[in-house]
Image 1 (tube, rainbow, N blue to C red):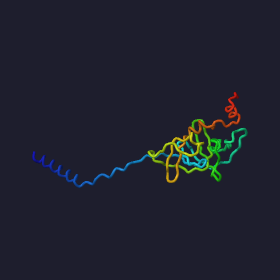
Image 2: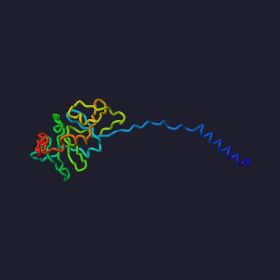
Image 3: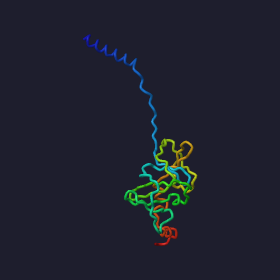
Image 4: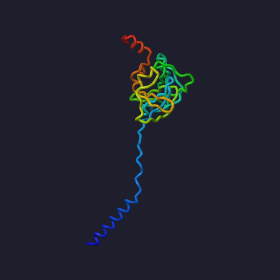
Length: 189
C-alpha cells in the first residue's frame, strides 16, 4: 500500500513543480468588430454604403441614350451581355456633378432591380469600428433623408447611407418623363 501512495506523492510533486515553473498565458487582446462598406464621393461628400448593397464598381461604360426619360437617366450599357441602366445619382437627388469627377458606376442588384448609379469617384472598401458610429451626419441637405449614421476617419467624415432608402424613397423608379408629370400633377395616366 505504501507503493501506491509513493507513486501518488511523486505525481503530486511533479504537478506542483510544473505549476511553479509554468509560463503564464498570453494577455487577452480585445477584439474589435468592423463594419465594411463601399466608399464613394457624391456632390462633394464622402459616402459609404453597406458592402452587400454593391455588386461591383465600373468605369463609366459606353452608353446608349434613351428618348423620353428623366434627365438623371444617362442611358443603358451592355455589361457582359446584360443591359445596365445608368442613373446619375447626383442629378436624381437634385444636386450637381462635381467638375473633374472620375465618373464611376456602382452596380446594384436587389431582387429584380439591376442598375448602375453614376457617382463622382469610388474609394473602394472602407472599414470602420462598429462601436464608433456617430449619429446622423452630413452637410448636404439632399443626402440627409438617406443618411443613417456616420464614421470619422482621419481627416474626413463618411456618411453612411441606406441604398434601400435611396432606391425606394427617391424618384429612382420613375424614369419615364410622363410618369413624373402624372405624379406631380396628380392626374390619372
